[in-house]
Image 1 (cartoon, helix red, strand yellow):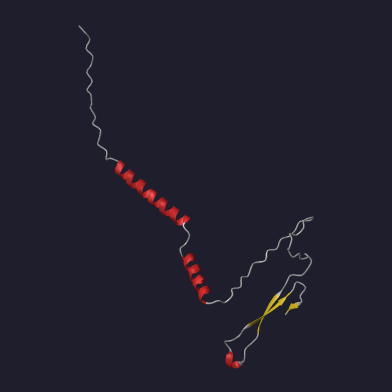
Image 2 (cartoon, rainbow, N blue to C red; image 1 turned 180 degrees about the vertical axis):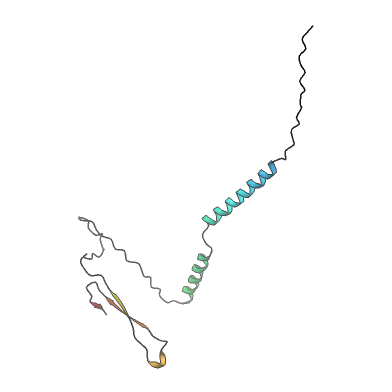
Length: 131
């Protein structure tokens, strides 16, 4: 007799159906691209208020021919030993005193209390008053 092998019961398991993830992936991808685009646009684009102010200033200049004074900042450079100043530059000795600006407010007469104007006294580095 042939030896019989035991029969094993096969438990056929059925896989549970999973929902399709592709639509959610597409939605999240599209949202990420939109958010990245908005952030990149906010960082790269300049504010829109600057051209309007420049346009208003240009219209004011055309209507009134008053001269505009531009105050340029003074840049001080300390030269290293052996260096020379560039041509046209003003050389100030390091031991000279710094210039002082004194603002004095003079009280106006009693009837015009609100019309006080400051008096600016400009001095050179040595302390001499510039008229």
